Length: 380
Image (cartoon, rainbow, N blue to C red; front, side, top):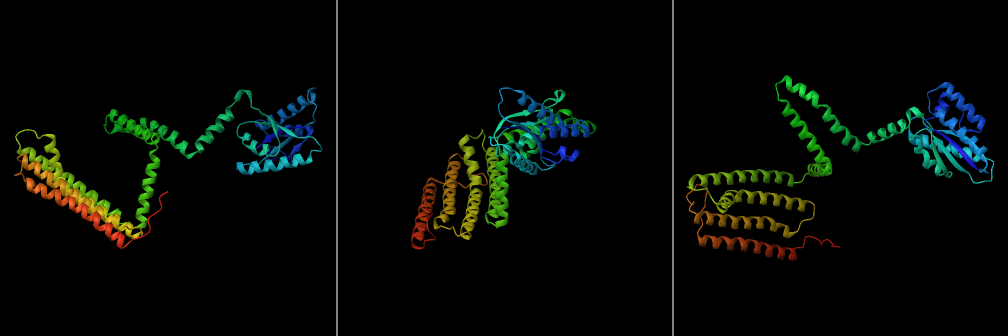
């Protein structure tokens, strides 16, 4: 048996006429179509009902169709698509239950656009669908489908932001230029600013940086709420590194003012390292102590974690002595801020730095064996 099923998702038939749904039978559907067209001549659902009647008559008149043919109109509800789909599913169940036939039933679905076709999975779960016919007014063909597609795209927050934000920035160009002219600001500067904003936004979306930013904000919020010591020590370490950078640049400028010729790249590097390494070492020790404290508070402390500040100090000693020796060799030992080292001092510094790293590793390895802090995690 073939069932011509006319779909009215938002229940225009029930709201605008006095017909109870579902409507089954050719004469009943025709009466419902006339009533709906009379109540609202502009409603496209009346076209769906008339198309259903036309499809029914064509199938009945077709000599090659040897099956029974019936036509029915089912409606949903206005508002929620979920409620509308469920209502249509219930009405289809009532239609199928009322069909007095022993044949297998398949459906030909008649709709007036893409929105009504969202109910197809509900229909398919109850009866096989042979075909779907979309009825639209010729003067407005595909207009509803375009509208519905645009509505769905703009309802998606991610797509909405991708499309509307650049469009909004472009539409603001003229107001920006008008305001700029009132304040005697060159229009080229405004266009450059707008272009920069669009470029940054495009790169931001294209590279997927919104996920990185969201993760960073989430981690920062967790650190604040959990009261981690690393938040304070990282800020202090950044401040120490900034001071170290300024000190390194200041020492380089003092050396440049002393030497007669332009300093060589190795001399520049030695000056920057010699002036900044102490502050960088303090930053490394500070941040590592904060991390060790957080690990201890979280019951994840290991003795070997204490190696970090000693390693930082050992590296700093080596770099400080080597850079001081190099500056001394190049004849800038008299510059304020330069600590000159002889070859003997260099040997002692390298030895002290190496022993500091080796002894700290050995000491904390012994402490770990004597006073274990926990079970090592299993590595799979």
